[in-house]
Length: 350
Image (tube, rainbow, N blue to C red):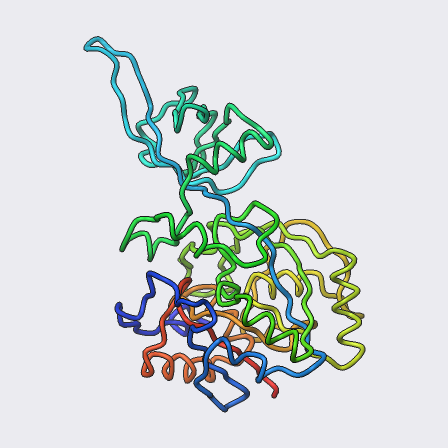
């Protein structure tokens, strides 16, 4: 298939820059086969069955965006430059891969100071990224990063406004537990205590898995033939307990419904012909139309960017023609798009 098969025109005013409040008041488009229903996230229990299981990504977004200063002595005195850093992922050697702006102003071996407690030295440049070694590790690093960093809002929000204190809560899920993501599993942002209580009362169960969402989720697809696209890798884990819960639900006839494309990609990475197995490691699974789903029966997700890998994924869930109709309906009805936008529940076989 061609990249143009996943393109559509989106009016800019439909790009959400703030979430709905309360979270579960967000609108939710429900597509069950060819049937489309306009609802709200708080209505989710009514579209599920007792015995269904939601799979939730418990990754926690770190405040990965940092502003610092580079100091360099010169003949006319000390010169400084403002350096912006977005952390991408930790490396096995203890450094962090990072996007650095402007990378050209920073030399290998130079230090960037972010706060009185936190600084880093540039160890290497490669592939347009930097490798930073921080002065702190472990809990000390986490505390200093939390104090100095800002939430790494997606580019389409950051271009419209800067991150602020509200994003500390808004861009984090209710059940965030394991730090490591630099982007939120945004379908989960619609869940609050009221919705969780309604789901429990309905007899819906929950399993937690972890996929640390990387900045690669926002990378554009640059090839015309999507078979040539190289997917980014992200670290994930399906525990023995989660695998057992999912397999038990399937055996009892319940449906497995991941909340978000990250949870879906992870459970399909861990899928076997006999169910799902415990799993840990990096996945670069690329789900496009024609993919055979072995675990997921449906998907709750947000509305995605044109020509993105996530548009390809939802097209694999529902079929490309159905997704085109679903997105045309969402645009005509003024649904809000992207990370802080509205939700959809995609059920290919109701």
